[in-house]
Length: 100
Image (cartoon, rainbow, N blue to C red; front, side):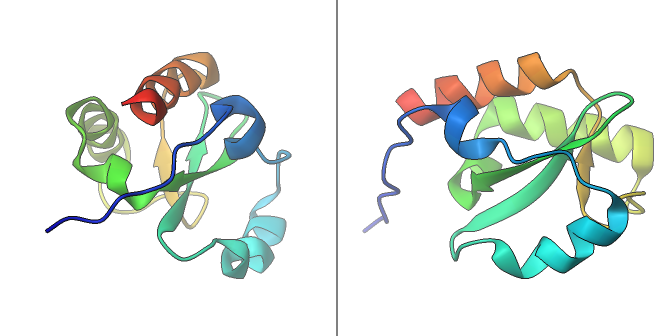
């Protein structure tokens, strides 16, 4: 028996939140809905996205997590999970995941 996560209509519109400083991000940590996690994405300027935890089991998202582990280990500069890829690549991946 599995759980179904509701589909996301527009990944870019729903997932993307404004760019935040580390202090602002800490204060928003409580604003993540149950069943979701916040990640920071970008190569230089990091943007905060909120994604369903079901994405964590998907092979394409696990590739991103492996990149994060290679670059940061388990110490992330933003205090949260930081994924070192271009924002548009992340949006493409999460858009594909939301359709499946």
